[in-house]
Length: 240
Image 1 (cartoon, rainbow, N blue to C red):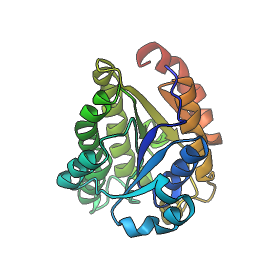
Image 2 (image 1 turned 120 degrees about the vertical axis):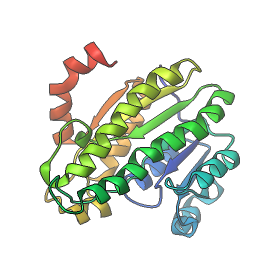
Image 3 (image 1 turned 90 degrees about the vertical axis):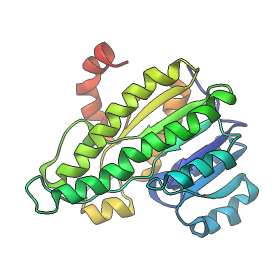
């Protein structure tokens, strides 16, 4: 199923910077009528509202706070496209003394946050004709890197949840898409120490391409595309 962005109302979590900001801009360039910029601090998207006016709507949302997620779903009751992009990352190995604490922190946002978004917005999407839920996962969802053990584990769990949501939400006519970027040049990527990273606009382009093609898996960036090519046969046979 393909999805026409033009004229639609979207919501993007973590839209104030990095990948989320690039996705928001891409949607507006594709003709979206309005995009809710769902962020912890609405003032952080002031520059975007100055450029795009009322086509960008700041919306307070923290994935770790269910009450804010539910309130956001009440406010953004006209959305037909939801992109869950916000996430957290720590550089923590499996034998680190902080591993359990780091995993709890990452799970709370990267996994529980996805579940909270899905539970809050599934009824909204259904009411508005089905729409699309896009989850920004990672190549870390498929392969663990020891220095980032806990982050990779959280993204693997998020990917697993995404697969389940694909089946569950199909019944109400909602398409689910899983985006898998490689290392990306964002504040989070810089903090992680990525030496080679793709621009966030590549991820935004991948989201737009996935919406137009209707593909469940979309890999963004050279490293991700290489991994995606290796993973493709399994994905087509067992997941898609």
